Length: 325
Image 1 (cartoon, rainbow, N blue to C red):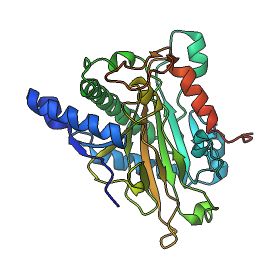
Image 2 (spheres, rainbow, N blue to C red):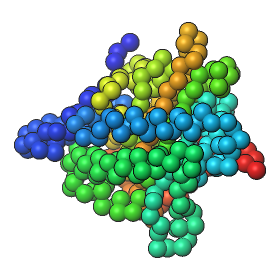
Image 3 (cartoon, one colour):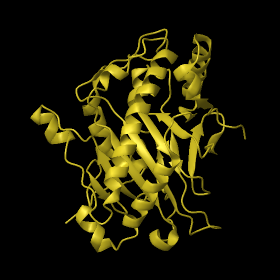
Image 4 (cartoon, rainbow, N blue to C red):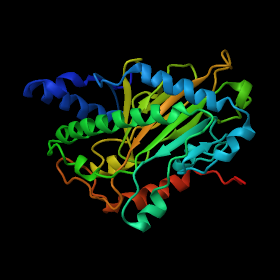
């Protein structure tokens, strides 16, 4: 099979290089997002030790007894613990599958909004588990790094389209970013996979830009390309995996494709395999009107949409009904 067209971009010359180097990077990004919707980025300056400490702290929570975790249980879009069976991401494609084989800790924007209507739907204080008190400080440091990286990436994306550098970033003054720590334990915790069951079922992300810090594994990330079908995503321990979501694809008039992906279940020859991903979902400021970039840059002129009406419909589509009481 051919390799998916997912290049590795070193951000160092983008941030400090000359015009020719920056233009070459922008062209590479444009081509990658027109094919697979994914990139790897290095030169981001985020300390790998910070990422390791977050994983260690989160694992200490995930391995607690269920009755200790249960008070933190929430539904998709909440702040807290998403237990087994809470999500089925393939639902967003209209495919009914068994629930995803994972647990998550979920956090979101840390500053309330001035509009009480927006606040009621899109803001709630983050709930940090008292059993792992160090997690809050580690995540807040990490999220500060993610906000900086997202701004750099959005500037790069604007120039990759031949637009002004703040074309996207000016709509991110008070975003409803999300942050998931996804734990993918082995079959000793989750049980044997059912037919058609994944750690995360096939889907595209919903928003603008996703920044993923992942671990390599046999039951790991796969990316869909028209040329090769499902293929293992390339892995670099120093790199973040970047993909764009449905809203960004719509914004570009389908010039760029929302990267379709899935996470495989634990492999039969290594059923105890355990992985953890740190996933930052970049979003807009609520009320952003997303209008497709016109031709010749864009290819399809979609009806303008309110970014958060769109996101709410998508989040609702993957929620598995369950009683959290």
